[in-house]
Length: 91
Picture 1: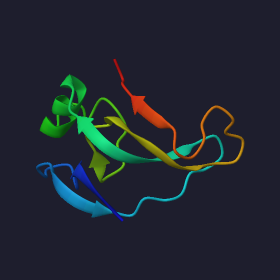
Picture 2 (picture 1 turned 60 degrees about the horizontal axis):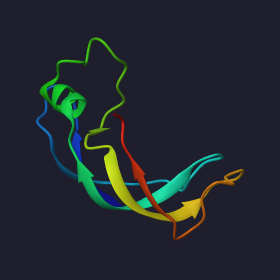
Picture 3 (picture 1 turned 30 degrees about the horizontal axis):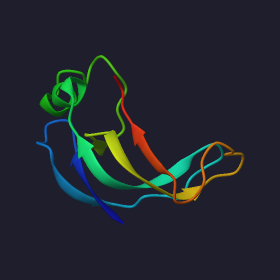
Picture 4 (picture 1 turned 90 degrees about the horizontal axis):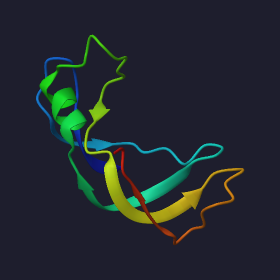
């Protein structure tokens, strides 16, 4: 389980939710997030402006730009190892 800022349903406000986080699939890594931030796209998603423009599967986690440490690597991952410090920025 992990705590994430998320929108549970179409008409809901963002809130902290406890979500089950699966292990990484092929080509994926699982990261223990140490810091996350919201960008303009997150604000538009949280406000509901994009529900009709993009497909969404609830709960929708916002604040997907982050920095942290790789905890697990999935099959076929060669560029990252457990313990690597990483960041993801959608800009």
